[in-house]
Length: 231
Image (cartoon, rainbow, N blue to C red; front, side, top):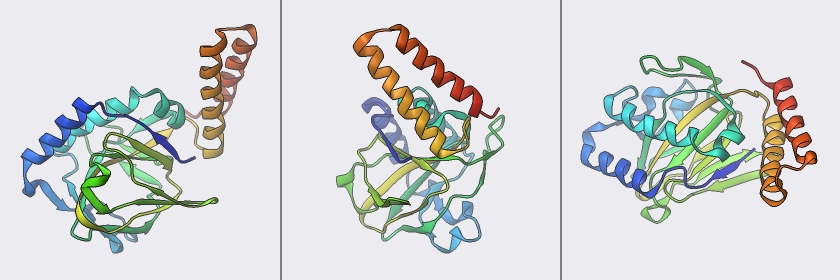
């Protein structure tokens, strides 16, 4: 399931994060290949904040909290454990060729999630689309190629099994935070069904209130979640 999650960050949160990154200067941006696997390192050409640094940890906590407070993200990802976000920047032709995220991701924070299974990948955009040229996130699935270039503060959520890439940034700079989630429900098709059911329940509740039929439908949702969830 490929899902656009709008307004993960408030304008105030976004402004604060961007200001911190701007004030930190150029020296904080390191070669992004340091966190790439054997295959990905051959196609990765970007910059990122040092994982586990004070700067990355502080900003990452804001991103993580905002995602976990967003009902649509929680409904879609059904997060069990999440790693700290990585912050990346693309400029001057920076790109990330076709790759699939590693099956396991490690959280380097003290007291963090440790090693998790990557079920759901999330990109939170920190640059406005008009601030850079190129840089589209291309996600491949059974329905074809999907081009993603969102407003700053919005997120895209997609299965970590997806083939994807970031097109070269030919002008300006593209900043984003990326992270991985181990879901309570491993299978993407089941997560998608639960998400659609949850969204339908919410819509019907707003329209009709808690009718007996809606209470029954909510029970079916939780019974499916109980059947499919892994703890």
